[in-house]
Image 1 (cartoon, rainbow, N blue to C red):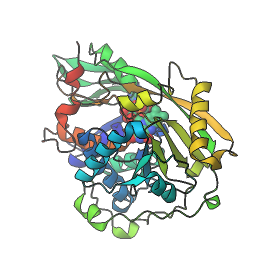
Image 2: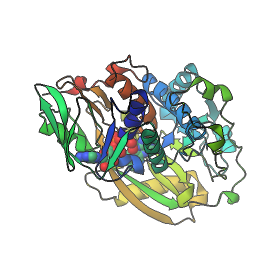
Image 3: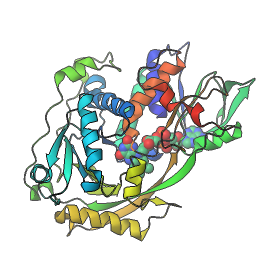
Image 4: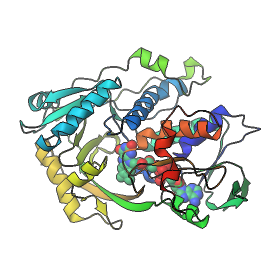
Length: 410
Ligand SMILES: Cc1cc2nc3c(=O)[nH]c(=O)nc-3n(C[C@H](O)[C@H](O)[C@H](O)COP(=O)(O)OP(=O)(O)OC[C@H]3O[C@@H](n4cnc5c(N)ncnc54)[C@H](O)[C@@H]3O)c2cc1C
């Protein structure tokens, strides 16, 4: 979120009179974003967030072509499954997606099995198929956004830790860091779980709670062992022409072609009934499985299995996640487990991120509370923060919906 904000802010301002500096304590992508499965899909209960996802996905789809920087886009398609308990949810999801112009259609269980060879699905299931959805490479995307931020004139200070917000008379004056004082009347705080610590030092409580998210891996079967998948349709040309938040001055002859990616054993599969997902990671030859953490309903569906109290991955989570993978895709029955991991994220009291100005301190902005599947929203978040900081009308998201003031207690 910080890299995206730096990229958009640098692009809109003058690097000499309004320099943008990105402070990163460790390395770009060392937080939860770098470990995200980075699934891009429009499935979201909230209409406003679905619009953000739509903009962001178009942004990722045209990123390489417009900027010369790769994001590791894999348009594998996303299949959303719903059993009888989630049928109503599925109906409203498809209605919403179609009402905002997303290419998505309903499939019966038989059609889903035909679409995704190897998938086991009971006849009382239904599905939503998003052919143009897919994934990006999380770290590659962050690196590319960082490179573009520098191209627009931002300075990235890697290995520099923000230690204290310096506030005078209710206004930001700068940040005390491990490399000295940085003077600035406008500061975006997007430090993952550390955001809460820096806010607390300044006497601000936004009710943020840390949470451990677990996920586990299975070795990926060879796609050749499957029937060939229908290749996703190419992105329509007019999509790219319409949406242009980051047009650059790169000369076309330097723009590389989108790398050709081979087939995957299956698209991203999200099972709303079980609160579970599976996503193939080609570069690592493994499939990631975990809890689908989209909404309170989805959290309930997985029985809170993926939320640990510390960084340890529990056996019950592993057997739940692998069990579902082998049930849905019998071709995984002979595949070995390939490790597990966990990651700390930040959740807000109402489950919605906080993006925007903290009115108690002039010039302070936050982007935090991303505990679900918000990696994909980073372009909209960054663009909106840049608009807010410039005092422009915010078109990238609904500012009231994400306003930090709704949860400030002190
Ligand atoms: C396992 C997992 C899977 C996920 N999968 C998806 C997904 O598929 N799709 C999706 O959309 N979202 C996904 N998410 C959520 C997504 O990763 C997060 O919502 C979002 O990327 C968080 O971004 P962030 O910038 O707020 O935090 P972070 O990525 O944590 O970034 C914070 C950065 O701040 C730096 N920092 C911390 N303290 C300081 C300091 N004092 N000074 C300077 N720098 C500091 C950190 O080093 C870090 O680089 C997933 C999350 C997890 C944990």
